[in-house]
Image (tube, rainbow, N blue to C red; front, side):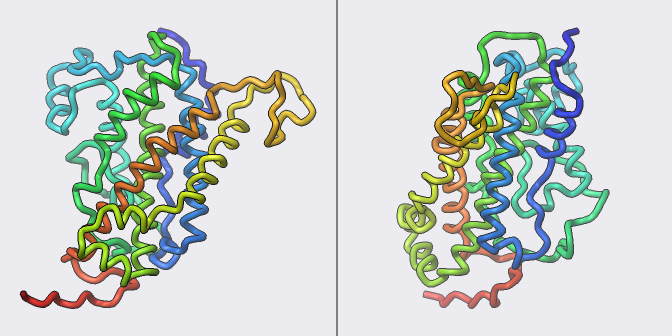
Length: 316
């Protein structure tokens, strides 16, 4: 077997970061725009670091081949029953989710598993003062769950451009790092639910009119701030440029934001990391937000924390 090139300390740090979901203490904190911005920016760091770690392995597409014979008949049946094509990568995702489910990860309002069913949560406790009865969001419709799209984009668009083609035999390490990448990206995408809810509460009348008109384009414009998105992408590129620099010797000004030294090299292409956010992460996030808003007035699961009771709709 090949020895993994990971430094144990680095792997432990990245694993801890990738497994962390956003910390929600209470509904007020969760929906504060300043808190949302801070969380989203912190999630950028996690995504970039996880992609840097993934890039050290070749594409290793055998990890994504269906009907992995190494799993054996029993595991393969279990995995396919969970909604997978039976590939090794899905097995790592599903087993990780089974573990995280036990410590209540998927009770968090913006965490959604790729596969199921999962074990019942039985360990640990919910974060801060939040309880199982505290609802921050309205019901999230199935249309707002984009895990299948994310999985396909990651494997067919991101990995081939991020990693050297070929197979280096590090299939286990590849599958582990894929879990980190996918979980951090999914956490970032579904945090858009808090953004959508915050915008709905701050401009309820405008949002309600668009929802009642089923105006998807109008809702997309409602949640979009192109200038902010452009700044976010530039921040991601700068972070990727900083985090991924190869530093073999001290060089004056090497870590300065711009312009980079002509001799500076990177573990990954910073501009490509920016394009991942521009072309995939942000569009998926906005699709989640719009689908959530379109169903926002249909919630039937009881009161939402911080919101007045919903009025009964008039019969027509």
